[in-house]
Length: 279
Image (cartoon, rainbow, N blue to C red; front, side, top):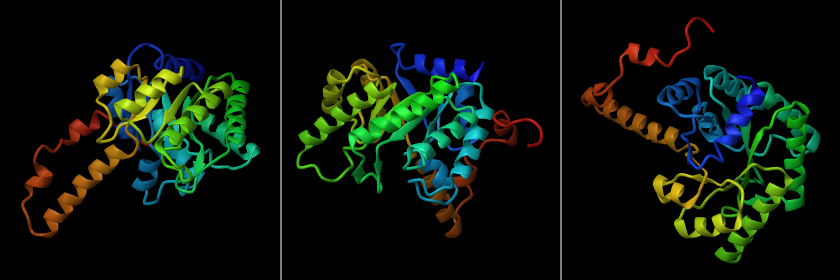
């Protein structure tokens, strides 16, 4: 399937009446596992990729390093891949467009694109972010690819709001502006409760992405509410990291082998998700 066809396939997954579930990955083996289990698309998590390599999220990882991992993930599967591209790794339009070109060269067909900086404390002015979304769309259109833009609004994290109602209104204003600018899906990150999502669903016509957390409405309820997409960010990676830490503690304390060996996969079971041959 061509890259342009994969982009259209990813777009259609947001509008087929089913909840698009994206357990974000950070490496090729995770991507291949999801494809083998029947997931229709793959999403990366910038935080999981960065943290797995020993760095913090927030564009602290070199763009070259991020794009190398994205390329490996894209090449490892046949289904569409959408990338958590943070804020585009550039504050200027020219640099942003160059980076989007490089992202498209990996074979990716979608991206998360956020509107904040400073660990989500500060929001870009809406006109500035609108211009940036239009710039992303322009690059993709020149290449004949409908890059699926998932526009993220960080109002629930940012400073400067005096009430929860003010935050919700800012999210709605931002997301509707981003849709007008060319976003295909919007991402009001930071809220997954039924009450807030009901307000957003009523006042936003485009597909909505929700981040899964311990407090997020259940997957079945999200689908019933008309939410289109749910992603897990870095939480699967961090959950596995917690299990790894527990294993290390047990070993350090001269404990039993069972914490590592019980339920362990054989080499053959792992091999099902590996690429054949040399790199």
